[in-house]
Image (cartoon, rainbow, N blue to C red):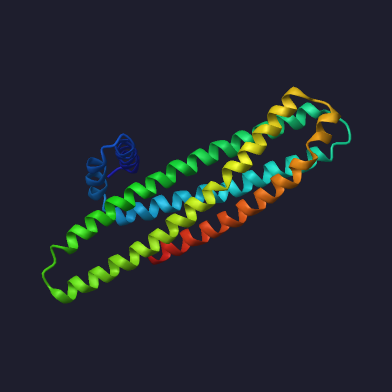
Length: 214
């Protein structure tokens, strides 16, 4: 089958999932050999990719804030525009991560619901017991990943709020005096970004472990 055609079909299937037609989406994906387990792993990879990019984008914003606080003269408006772009990049990435985590949670819920129902159909006691153990282990592994992903995501919002405050303040006060007022916020933003990057590293590592074991 033509690869371009396959990509179009898969994109259409993804659109069905986003519109709430999950059963049609899953059936379409199964035609291409993609079970819910494969879909879940792929979706976790998407979250991992987004969080890796988010680390760089929030670090870039912090770098701009540090340079801004060390402002010694020049075109302050250029700093404002740069920080505004940094903020918009971070905000957009945060929204993407939230959506991708929501997708992971929805697919995981459907997967474990199906798995549980299928275990009930197994008649062989030994096979059933083994499947139950595999189900329990996988669910525990997923729940650990889910918690780490969501915990790291929460750390984005305090940073975004402070970056937004700084952007708006600069917009209204493009002068050296305004930079001095920001002094207290620099340390606070730095601490929040460092914690965020640490937590996202933990999430990325947990995602990697989940993908390799699941």
